[in-house]
Image (tube, rainbow, N blue to C red; front, side):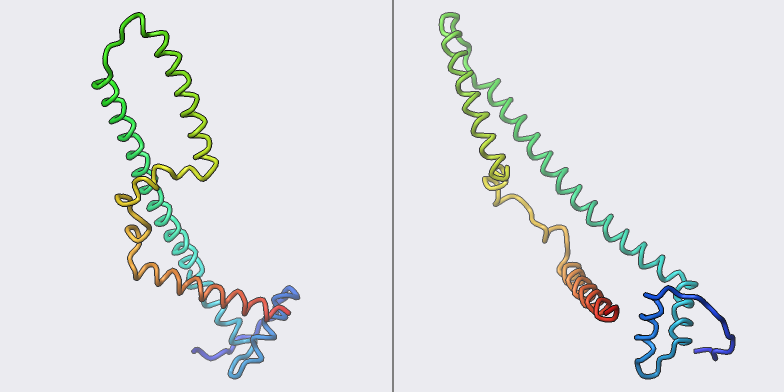
Length: 170
């Protein structure tokens, strides 16, 4: 490290002053060294790099979620289109005298369908995915094992750092 030769008078907030004093109590640390390291980090754009890294990681996660939602929407659309195709090709032509009775029966069946759908949606709305669980993909298909392990390590380190920061303030 370069020799600390320049003297500077600064004003700090009480919170930062107490944190600086606590950090300077460690062996081989001084207030001057800590402030010099902080200024070096500030001028090296390290703060911006870490912020950008977090933003990029979050955008990556959002892009993966978007891909999953797009896949789910495509699945629902294709399912509906297959149903309509089946209905239009397999439904027989109705006789005029049966149309009213069948229309009334259809209204009752539709009301039953709407009630069941409402019940499924109140329960979480995952009926389609429970029925198709064997062909659906999971989060493992979007993240590699290394990425999952890296996220877990980063979360653990962040948790330790935040707990350490809380202890230093007290």
